[in-house]
Amino acid sequence: MNWYAVQTQPNRENLALAHLERQGFDVWLPHIERIIRHARQVKSVRRPLFPGYLFINLDLETTRWRTINGTVGVKNIVSCGHAPSVVESEFITALKARENLDGFVDTGYHNMKPGQEVEILSGPMAGQIGKLLSLDAGNRVTVLHQM
Image (tube, rainbow, N blue to C red; front, side, top):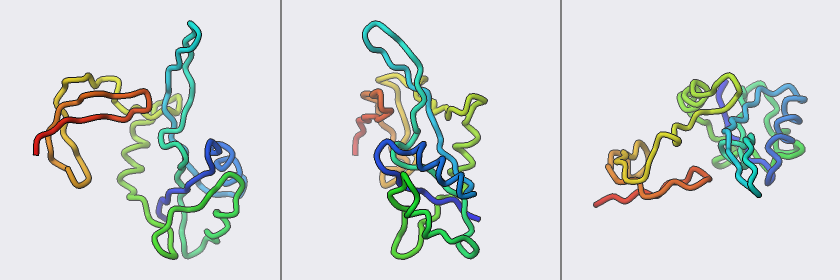
C-alpha cells in the first residue's frame, strides 16, 4: 500500500476526510496550530498543514480508487497521466513523527528568526545556504541567497 495526495475542494478538507473515512479509506489530514489575533482577542485554531490536500493510503490493485474523485469534498486524486502519483512513504513517516498528542504537526518554524542562516534541503536549489528574510503567518519563507 502506498500514500497518495488528494486535492480537496476549497476549505473542504474536513468534509472530504469524513466522507472518505465513511467509505472505509485510511485517510490522514495533518494539522498545525495557528494563533489568531483579532479585535484584542487571541485564540488557537486548527488549520490544515497543506490547505486543499489530504493523504490517503491505498493499494491500487485491490481498491476502486476512481471512486475517490466522486467523493463529496474531493476535487481529485493527484495523478500523473492515468494513475495516481505516489507520495514517498518517508515523507509521510517523517510528518507523522512530528505529530504531537494533540494531533498537530510541529513544523519547527517557531524557532526560526529573520537573519538566521538556513539550508535548502530539497528541490532545484538543494544544498544552497541562504539568509532567512521573512516568515509570514502562512509559514511561507523568503530566503536570500547568492548564486
